[in-house]
Length: 386
Ligand code: NDP
Ligand code: MG
Image 1 (tube, rainbow, N blue to C red):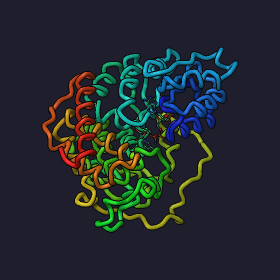
Image 2 (cartoon, protein in one colour):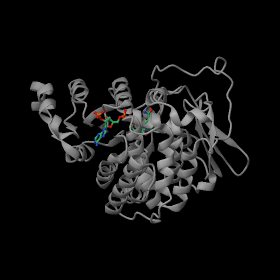
Image 3 (cartoon, rainbow, N blue to C red):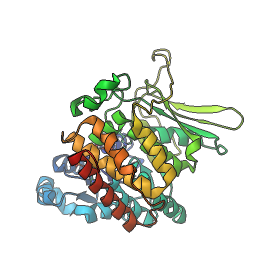
């Protein structure tokens, strides 16, 4: 039996994680649930899964959460704010913490869990983009496992079981909703259009990141940290069908890939129950009925976010903190309809044209650089330049 602390339980990955927990009641027990502000769903989840700890990040929702929990609140520790989320990450009985918060907000809780020596199943890629330089050494020091949930990284992790170091990693990419869209119309697409992803149903921020291809850039940086690979040895392939989740190649010219239907519950289950693969009754892939599988190089002229991410990665962690923070600020401005789609990558480009330190060596530096990049991005969204 593994006890799971789930951070970001009310989101897309959080809900699918609870689906997996419900399928394996003898193997997985929910010890703690933390959400952002959706207390109706958080309370319903807590009433169903009965964790010892429940936390809502938005402190103004605390009273409402308690009220919704009613008499059940007496058996639970109900918390609020960042401290409450961190308490869930540190929960004494948790064996594994699934990080499914969106954005850099997930970094401190993951570091807190690692300090306690907890294993981490990580969906929240921004944690590694902004804090890989802190997370990876801490995981090593505490002998804690870092199990990828992001489908591409789970695929690579699965391909590397029992293997030697690969020569290259190949991350597949769906291309997002605008891969074939006319270039001149691309800057003007709306949030509604961008939120319609062809193959995956995800939270708003990652869906916009998928449309700009910044998501793949974040994943390149994530792969650099998880698999200790140089940026020159991480490639991206646009694969519209999202069946091949990623590949690795070896010095002997052999290539391994992991395939499956696009369903995040597969990598979530693999991370939570690793190294076991119990039957789960999810729909299975039938290669005789899938459309032909295609692979092409990404177009970084039309989608400069991917190129900017590689550049940031090569510059070092100060630049990746700034890249991530500017992107978060710009994506949220786009979702609020304050800027156009094209302004997301224009703003990223402008923020990245600044000098950023090669290393963000501690959490205070990460927090300071993050704030500086958000401030620059906000200035860009108002004036169109820096
Ligand atoms: P969602 O936006 O659907 O969910 C985000 C979750 O984080 C919600 O539970 C939200 O709470 C919570 N949250 C937000 N801010 C805070 C905070 N400050 N403290 C605590 N909780 C907070 O995102 P997704 O589930 O789509 O994505 C989560 C992460 O997983 C992202 O990093 C994403 O890149 C990654 N990922 C997602 C995939 C997917 O298929 N969705 C695939 C691969 C990776 P509330 O809603 O209650 O406000
Ligand atoms: Mg992914």
